[in-house]
Image 1 (tube, rainbow, N blue to C red):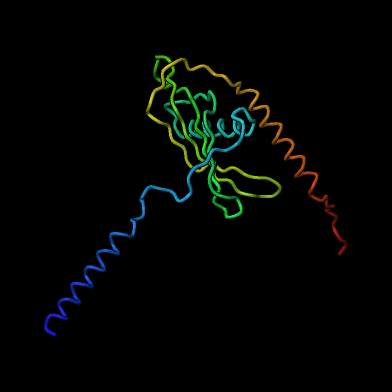
Image 2: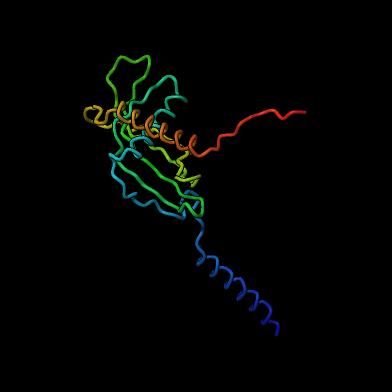
Length: 179
């Protein structure tokens, strides 16, 4: 009887340590939803527009260095719109030029992440975060995509959306009623 209480105590400690070893620790930096490839062409106007928008956002926040959009190299996605957690990640090739530098432009990788929501008739892409990587890529940094055509497409889409908004709102007359 005198050995039963210490033995049960040791057995309890053993069971607790076994369960603690078998339960995995949650990862700090990992995501529950892995990134999957987004099946869309890299030359699609939506992808190019989002890439240019991310580069322009970086340029507004950082005045001493300017990025020039070259092309989109990879597109990834995860989450679902219906649950409200869909995100799109673009890996972009950019050329970095400092305002006080006279050296050649340097090719670098730039990543931007957009949050995708359903508003109105279509999807909306809101920029969530961006990052410029410090690695410098070898080779020439020449633009393969014409930014003017992308900007023209953006203006055409915005003009079309404005026409839809104006056409859908009812016209009301403002007349004063007699007192």
